Length: 456
Figure 1 (cartoon, rainbow, N blue to C red):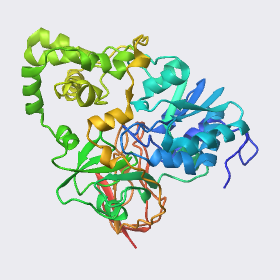
Figure 2 (tube, rainbow, N blue to C red):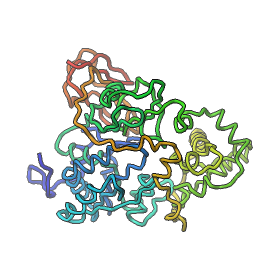
Figure 3 (cartoon, rainbow, N blue to C red):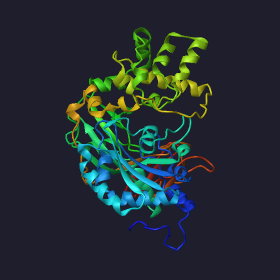
Figure 4 (cartoon, rainbow, N blue to C red):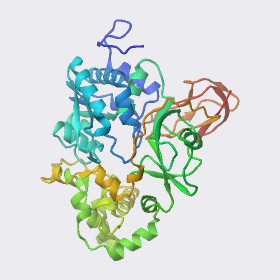
């Protein structure tokens, strides 16, 4: 079904924002990466600029590049829909001007001519270009305040897959499938589309299996990845799986335990300040100075509390520890731990205006250089989409695969469900997202953690 081209719905009424919000909420749309913030909350506002985040700055991931290339018509119609519903004057499809995106550059330069107020915006190939604060600043010239949102400077941004889900939601289709990239030690690096809740082993089989026996699994890329096990399942926020040998440099850094990196940091940090000078959020004027957080390792009492506060704007991007630090320390982990400590103590940041550093443009980290620093060059190959049919025997649908409260199961063991059946609902009055069956089958079990469905 084609997307609506005008602000009139099928019944001849003006399309109201409330209607889009209701449909997006019903469909269970969340951010397709990161924390999975419920999208119906995002679109329930007025903004000047709507931004599609196609930066995909994590090394080795490819799925957004493929979506940009293969789903341009659907994406542009979804941008039009959101732009009009939110009253924006400008719609922007932002992605990197690089070899892997040459076809997308040609497509969007040509097709955006057909859309009033929609343009493509080409980013440099740097990390982390996809951070929402950096992206909004690059596109609009305005820095969202610390403790605030892009909405505070008249912008809304979500990634490519989320916009496609918004378009699907308006047509009545809930979120039941996920695009993701299989990369690293796999026989065939590939981007695939699978049912939400698919076990990792089924995704691995689609990539031809692993090419080494003692491998570790990183979910979501490298820099901001989560280390997962063989029993992991695909959620709405899974962007891909990267397999690395367990003795690989990058995997070793990601799995270092807190007592180790705390002890090394306390004894070895020489306060060179590279971690701060390269920090992306420091460069847009947010209150973060990782070198000062490192000092807290050797302090106690009020002194420790003072230095710990310089972690409050940390986003755990990994630049300080995985790129900037010449001694291979872990200021990113130490800052993230410090931020969690602040949250436990009830610290709530005040909204603070920010101004970009004069060196912002000159300290962007080339993705190729970052890939080399992490010793990932041999894995840096295209992972194009292939229409491989992945049919798991059972899916495990987590009730919390988004920011906010977990969904409440509304089915029980023995119930028959089809693709799109609601199996978990947002708790009354809470921030959350609905969860839907991704295969036809019988519910094996349902509790506050997950609904498990066995294929018919």
